[in-house]
Length: 187
Image 1 (cartoon, helix red, strand yellow):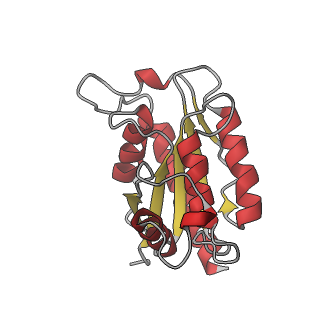
Image 2 (image 1 turned 60 degrees about the vertical axis):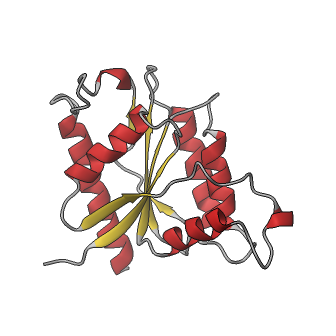
């Protein structure tokens, strides 16, 4: 049996019943046995402020950073706000990357981005902006397949069950990500 890799899932939407959270949970269910996906909450992170990030940073900063450090890789599932990432997600990236020189994102950990939107372009702007941040953070983002999920309001039935039309696409993404994780961590 291959090693099980812990993947921190960062959901860009704070809404409890968000489509993005539903997609993240569906991907966790579809994940091969080599991946263990766990959502890491970002809603309780105060806006990053170096003045409060000294010897005794907020407990939520410490918890978040420890969860990132304990992960083998990252899966971002996010909506797009104003052609970019939601503010809470950008804040989480900043909290995890500080203090300078002590980034909790690690060095050369694998990642993937799944942008989810009820709109037609599937969160392209958010997806691309995250990838720009990853270059600086030295997070190795899966290049292909890309995942821009438009029309996401139709992915789940009234009971929250993933529809059979969307399932194969998400299965392909999570399987490809498992391969990316394996090859990145071997190298």
